[in-house]
Length: 359
Ligand SMILES: [Zn+2]
Image (cartoon, rainbow, N blue to C red; front, top):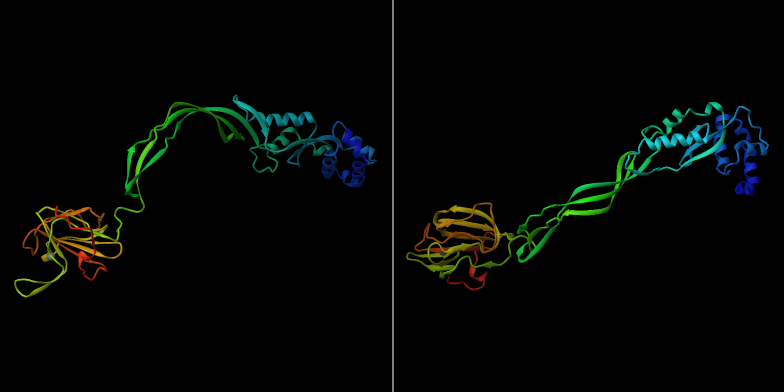
């Protein structure tokens, strides 16, 4: 009452100013709502209009407007009818587990004056407010809250152990992970009966998960990448140098170096790369060529056995064959060539790193 007493003149002047609309029946509803928003109960709408000197149409009846987020949605005959209607809509979404229920929208009941034909039957008003009535702009949203308990998996985590002298593409599964089980308690919010948000409030572990352990190389890149340096491709003794040399008849330009050792001595890739030839190649016998990332090519000849295939990527130091004497060779040795640009032979000794080991 105090609010009305304090703002009496303001309210009354608004009613006077809009009296014409008030008498226009349905249109009057907009005015009623404006007024009632300023008039706390139990002041009746009729009394205020009378005090304002407005001629209250004898056909108008006191009613209750239901507003949704401040917008008029429906008009019913009494506060009791409106409250029963709203309670019925809420009950439609309650279950035995429901702890509380509310509308997402702000819903207000405002006393007003309305033409009798504007006062709706409860069922008609209910249809406008029905949460399932997606065509109605006044459709309400019912939020319910319940506590739900579920037995669920507890996903395992993966721990990665870095191996300092391996490359990133070298991984292995050290231990498989196993999910655990837990009884989880959630505070669940449902929107029109559909779960919308579940917040974990309690968890009781039944079995703890076993984390997965994976090892991975710490060095960036792949073990098959070219390092840009060449290691000796085998062990033994340097039996023939690169370049001009005398042979029994005339002379020959030796395109590589020869390393002699026992048949079967391991031959390895001088650097990482891709095998572009693996097989018999005339006087070279069993022959392998590797293309490196820079475009350089290394070539390996006279082998007893080839251990790689064309297209395969190999790591620096990876065995690619065994020393032999296939093709044009007078003893067991590896004939080895380096073509830094893929086309021109240079002395491998000038590019090889470290010393040739005898064994
Ligand atoms: Zn040779």
